[in-house]
Image (tube, rainbow, N blue to C red):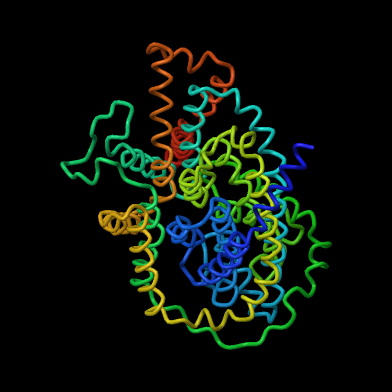
Length: 503
């Protein structure tokens, strides 16, 4: 009876006019931003944050969910038509989709991206509904010792799943931790790294950093790269024709993609782009027709398309339970949750159960809405993709500046956006993942506070970090993740030494 009452309350929250309008407008916004080459789903989400100040808590979260889901899908559109991925998650199978377009099968490629993205998003939502409450029961027994290792493990996972070298990922993460140390908001209440700048006493807010490294850096990159070729006007046939046949033929690949996406989504710092790359590689590895990959074969599109959207929903599991971002989008969402009083943690599932049910409903609604809106977006894609870069980029920069200022009516935030935009551009150009730095900034405070609080409780002893059963398991996992790059380096040295001696 209690659950039924909570469900009824959740539907009442979702069906509120402001929430429905937020879902619709955010969906359209996410589709447009995702379809513009180089503008990522994370950037779309970061630019939404200032708008969420003026929305109710459920409408604010709904806007982020809808915009991110739509942007991940619509990144497939320029990849398929221009061979320019709209988002990093689309890059894994851009060549495959473009090969299908050259064969005259653009409708099949775009339809597969739309259909299997929606199915993957629903599968990821089901995993969120099933996993989160079970893990919440376990998490209620966690103390600061477990939270320290969990946050530390989240930082290390970001280095394991980074596509660049683990050493560069660790360096990026350490830079993020350094930024998190700035200001007076630490257990000692002592100003750190403020260099006499009063604006830094309150620390560096995550939102200006996110907007800078994901939005401004992309604008800089777009300015120094050549303009993409104009899209020729063309009429599309039926978008969803043949998708049921593909579902029946490749149901194993779709299921595998969903499972891989869900697992990768739960890993802190991984995200949809990692899920898409891993799933596409697995699809080719286990395919009965691997020689067809790269020639316009839909099998890889099915698996990777299902995987990237499945990871979006499952990425909310660590975010809602522990305040640990599953990816850069949920890193932004955590800030919005705190801002709206929906503090992440296991108690969120007991004290605010109706809000959690509302979140599940929004995920399902957004993925259902993706199909009709996605079809419309595909049909108007030629118009959106023909928008001149000289018009789009200044608008994005203005949105970045206004958004940063709105976070605290502080002009210094605009300076931070510009600084971190330049830092993000330089890091990406040299192979240092900005996602690892963002994770360090978001998690730094949690790591430090949990560590210091635990030391106070244990009277300075480190033994309780390893004596408690769950804490000991998490410690072993974290230390293994920390030493993994060293093992990889030693293994490469051992393998290369016999080859050098043979020469």
